[in-house]
Image (cartoon, rainbow, N blue to C red; front, top):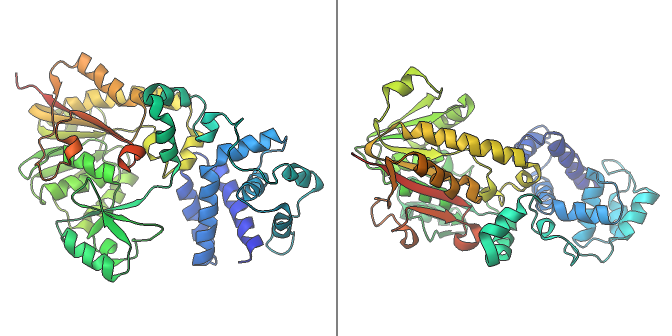
Length: 432
């Protein structure tokens, strides 16, 4: 593809993402490329890099367009982003040429607007901090209150692209064997600092076509998510309920900890997610997991009250801790979304707590950085449920990283631990 055709594709993809704002941008992008199989690998990488760069700096581009009085549309967003990343107006005119597969030529008005961006940089001293850090205006005060003098460090880290983290499936292989095979296949990687099963790929590398992935020797899983599984302390004799299993990432990690023994029920309200999870379980060679489509007040629930040694609630949440991976989610997050989530989380916690047997443990986790979804939820739950008390993880000492050995709850952030943002609390149901 010519540079002009590439930019046309970037504009077209941004239009699709904005039209389907209710869908994750990566899902829209995947479908976009599936429908255009003629786009080659290098062109696909360029288009992907450009669209994700735009989404990571969307608020700043939008701020500049408003400042110069320009209309805000996908075409001008891409043009302004190109200017702010160092292109000259003259080179931009050659890309917006109107030739075959190229964007239409810049109009006289568009040229006048874009002239105001010459020699400008993304950051301006006049730019509000919420814009600088790509945070919704209504969310920024929450972070300001929570993070205090660490806010600049934390929100800067949240702007950076996330790593590609792998969890080695010790049911099938060892960490050392995977390291050897990754080296043979010319992958650039390093061991994780906190997870004993974790390897981190450096830079842009794809693992999904490697036999290590297709044969279930590794799973893609952020290091923070791996730590949540470790904190459950599950062992091979336990009955475990993953209450909001989703696509089964933490379920798989717990099954591995249980050495394919005991029993795990992966429950979720979505058939699509459970079907995807079952494919992952099969690939990983795991057979101690049953899936269950959840329905409140079902007979299945009543028959299993107070019957599980561990119940993990990986609650639906704002996903603010994953904004490095999903920059588009920042743009669509509304106050009413948070209000609804807080209510739902409290309901789920209350329901899940009934499934924990006396002496068993309830673990509450989110991929959120917001206190309202995390410690505030736990404080309110403990106030209403005196039968539960915070405890340390009872996972084996060789699995627990030093920072988490005596923690009843923890908050991971990209700045502190170079993971996604995760929260986890460990609660035990009293025997008497």
